[in-house]
Length: 290
Image 1 (cartoon, one colour):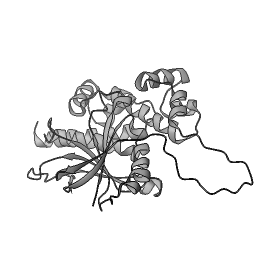
Image 2 (spheres, helix red, strand yellow):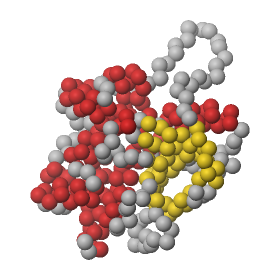
Image 3 (tube, helix red, strand yellow):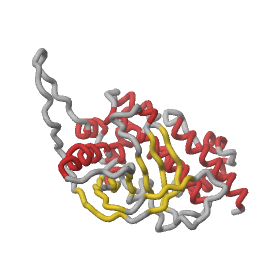
Image 4 (spheres, helix red, strand yellow):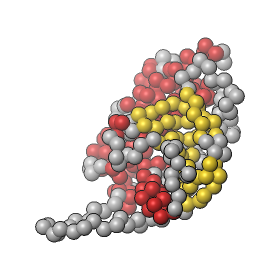
């Protein structure tokens, strides 16, 4: 593919990714998306699948259900309202799709994954007890090797960083920067419980040798330094990643005798959400130590 053609396709498919994320509640039919990409509907499917490594219908379905999972955990919205937010016409259709993807019905998922608030009797003054963690995680201490990355910055809800990763992979695949050795890394600069959602800062990255040129691109370089690192391997949907973070920084680190280094925590995504059930996703969370 010629450079000019590659650049044009990349830019057009990035517009499609943005449009999908912004219109999950709309009818994202092929003709609409092909029009956004300024491509013939007859060829759009094939071009999208070759560059994104996933059919457009699979992308839309996956992103809608990921958003629904986040809403089930993080809001009190009725399940029917959540279903309509991600363009399912009926509760039955949404329940079937969600259950097929997550292996559990939406109502059961919300009940299992949401912490139950403890109600105190009125007018009784109590001192807050030490927070209890009902799920423990195994922490490994390892030596982290220096890793060169390229990526895009993201500001806003961490659950929306998937959009940035989608565009990053389209961009880098069209530049032939993706290989079997490529690693997918997310950096997260702020505490989502302390910083306003709109101000959260993160970065979607892939590994790329520093000797490879990225001129004439919007990619930015960043290097993860060498050093001792605490890691937690988490298995499950991305919407639940706050749980191991809470435990790592709320219980393990204060009791470990270690100090966190002046570098943001980062995640490595060890399998592909395009072909992995949400409950089987593997994410390794890293915290560099002094």
